[in-house]
Image (cartoon, rainbow, N blue to C red; front, side):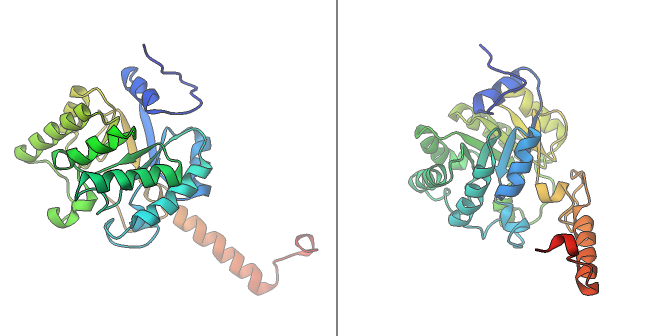
Length: 272
Ligand code: KIV
């Protein structure tokens, strides 16, 4: 029996499954701190991802590889404090799950114990299946991530669209089925042809969340700083900018500087 309720008080993996069943699209965004997470949660967003994209947009690195488990836990702890409704997913960072399933499980357990999040996300398919299985066996929900997996950037060489060739497309389809069979609750498909993403979404029963994967999937995710226009240098075709926050912040700060320099701030009502 379906448990989908449009005005759900707390989004769980079961609610997401029911949303797929009822053709209700899932909206997901990243967040990395308490204040932003609180704003997002109050809007009714379904999933908040503490992405390892924090490595890029919060720390200024040019890839997701440098961020550590401790740093992810720091970001996730703040996010969880700001969220009461959305499902919080936390990325396992590079190097914390690939080498063996025991390490993967202990990394996932640290995230669950120290942050209070509800689930973790891992990049990869068949090659990380032992790690996924082990984490799931501890009762920790796992979201998969296939297609352009940024932790493998040095293997790919570029951030261009993946799986345009048949061989890679076949591997992604097979990996999606493996992740579903293992028990993952959802899969992110990043930067792959829309037709391929639509095929996967129709073949598997768990929700498929796309980023640069077209509209025929069960939901969408974007990096918050990109869609708000805080970052300016990153402009892939799939990115829709909903705001130009960088310009708004600059204008506000310029006004503040002017007021301070001219003695216009603070005024009589802004002092004790
Ligand atoms: O780290 C991240 O922000 C992600 C999204 C791009 C899906 O994995």
